Length: 493
Ligand SMILES: Cc1ncc(COP(=O)(O)O)c(C=O)c1O
Image (cartoon, rainbow, N blue to C red; front, side):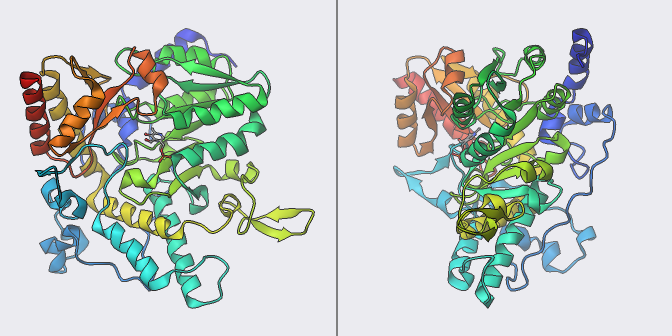
């Protein structure tokens, strides 16, 4: 079933207008003024039948909700006004910052400016407290207890799964597998599902802008199966070359693995369009959402990704917990990945039958506390509103880009119009590592290096860049301070 190329390219062009809209997944609840152009573009898209989103997930009954964060200090809430009459609190990063105790410290005598959010995000008190509470009040192993604490821990762990499903729009919590992080999620798919569809001579399509976590697992799969990696090129601005994508899809790769947001360029890829095209050509799609979920609303059913991976620690949750979303039917046909307790139904010495999804993929004692912590982080973000966060970060990114671009000798790497708050640059005469250390003297934490994306850096003829990456608590004042500091460095050194 080959579509004539011209027709396909026309289709790409028509859909290209909706890309940013798709990327930020502006659902019906989004404020109208978020992105007027995208709003307009979305009107051209035919409405799609989606199963209803899961309703907000309630805390387990034994856990009264904490009541001391800025969101619950909204005066309307305090007066007990009904939800419908409550004006949403204006987004104020200065207030949000109070929820993040780590941000109050000084580094080298200067206020900490945390601009390394793509590496990891800081944790709000509500997450820190959820972890403490778990260990103080109801620590227990899950799923196999007959006592009260086991019931409580199980309920909290499964509630975290429900919250995660609701957060990314999964059809059911059974589609959420808890893993260590994005890396483990992708390895799970590559090692357990991959060999079912990839064989000798088959092809796996990955883009030039992937993090090593979305490269190496596929290389390992290719090596064990005799398959081949296909390179999806990017343009100079740092966008996926969609015409090349269509040509490569026509070769019928079995799997497309694509990041939703580049951890170096910040580019927001049109995953919905890319998934639709891949499905048309019969390829399965894994989306690396590590740098997407913290920045804008994500809806896996809207993008129709077959698998979607992200890490808790990059979305204001704990380290050591991450998520693999998989369509239920796909997870069901995937063989177990690791063997052990929890993932079985019946075991004899010779053979075993396996548990239902997602438990089939969660062998051994789960990372219960951190799953609970992740649930608390997602609640926190949902209370603020991912649309508010997206708007704040978009404004701040545009502000930072405008100011940085004016600095003499500074070269921005990745100038796609649709970017999340990840900005890479080089500064003439200032090696990236030295510059990052110099900024650290002023309390500014940035990342320098290849950012685990060496093929991408090579694409630009670079070995390293300096990267600033924004989060919900960053402020315009911090951007001003960064730019002033860079100006001083440029002038004086
Ligand atoms: C785009 C992207 N994918 C995957 C990863 C790997 O995430 P983790 O180390 O949490 O597994 C990262 C981490 O920086 C990333 O930015």
